Length: 130
Figure 1 (cartoon, rainbow, N blue to C red):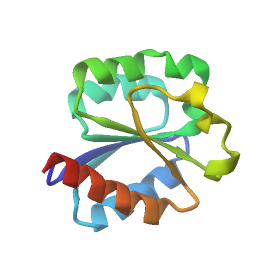
Figure 2: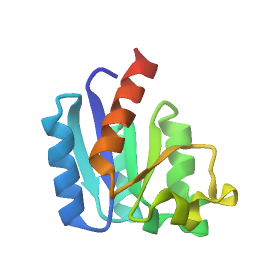
Figure 3: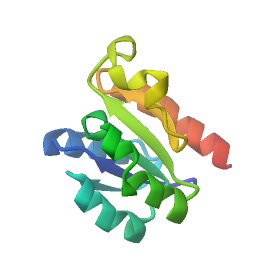
C-alpha cells in the first residue's frame, strides 16, 4: 500500500474535489475516485478496488450500516479500510456512539480537522501495510 487508492463517497462535490486534490498533492496517494451517493459507490467499488474509503457520515444511517456497501466491501475488498468523515466534532457526533459502530469501520475523522487527521490516518495505513 505504498501508493494508496482512495475512494471518497460524499454528497458534496466541492468537498470531494478539495479532498481529492489534497490527497493527491501529498504524494502518498496514487489515485482518488469520488462518488456522490451510495448507488454510484456500489457500482464503482469493485472495479476501482480502493485501499481506503472515505465516507460522509450523513450517508451513515442505520439502513446504510446494514446496507450492501459495507458488506460488499468486506466480502470483495477485505483489505480496504473504511473511514467515516463528519462535520461534527467527535464529542457531538451521534454516530460515534457504541451502537453505531460497525466491524468494518476503521476510523472516524472530523472534516473540521480533515487535513491533520487525514495525514495521520494515511501514515497509519502505510505503516500497517508495510
